[in-house]
Length: 373
Image 1 (cartoon, rainbow, N blue to C red):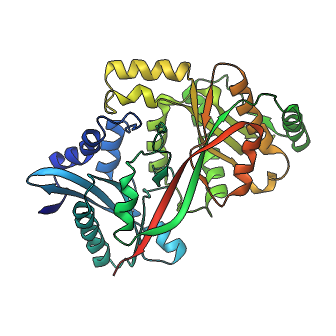
Image 2 (image 1 turned 45 degrees about the vertical axis):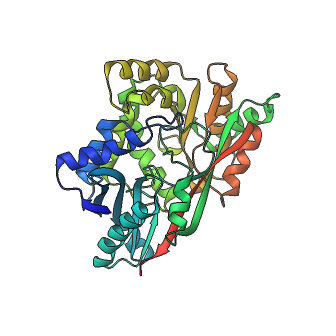
Image 3 (image 1 turned 180 degrees about the vertical axis):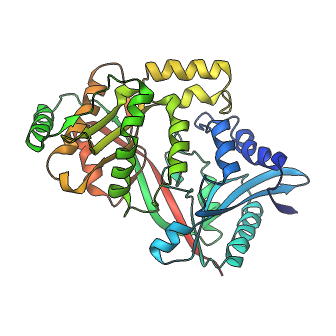
């Protein structure tokens, strides 16, 4: 018999965080989040007053066999005039009874709070890990996204969940013959629009602090209408910067600014540190830290985190500046591949940009939805 309990004690939270580390202990494709970051995020409830959460553990004969987090994202519900709860951090053995017990408990929690539907995997914000992997199970996961076993989709569908949206992901390599037009368009776009690429001579921390407000403002303007997005509060911004500061390499950050140094577009890539954190289960041991720092300095793979251009500069060639920077990284010989991470399958303009590269669509993720009866 499956028993589901609400996480209340630090000991329970430790079990909640560590269960997937045991479940995926022998999976070569799984990349854990950094243990300390995950602990801090879950303890703080997403560093926001705009979300309510519940953490659930499923046990059989005293042994953990599954976990699930439920979230009510109040900003999203107010924005869309809906009563939706999200689910995230769903992990389970291949057992329908376990999945059923977890989701029944989560849906009961949501229904008691007036929710009428459940959707996910989605986190507190669009910058959390999201989407259930439905294609690409034999591809390495990136540090920014979550891996799951193939049976997860069946567990959800057997409970009445249906597709809401899909995201696709691409692996990019340098083309056999580089398109020189891209570099010319990028240079012309900067000149004609009075723009420049931000100077990276500052220290990493000073560089990030200088452009952080412009970045988050640009992010909000460009992403506000995309699926599942909500504004990111100041405290959450601080937490995100704290989490990613370790793995940031200025060489892979591009801020495009106007004459007053206001951010009008950006392209953020992060060194692919997945292999560096696998062995430690995400715990930042001295050996893990050494591997991460080595990878950050000389990565073989980079992960494309976020790309945006303010509406008034779109269709003016500004995106070519970002694409050309990415092309230069891949053509330098230092970086072999780039992982695009999530592109909404309906976002044809974004996917069309990968034509400049030797690209391969190798993963697909899905957000599921169902009514709460």
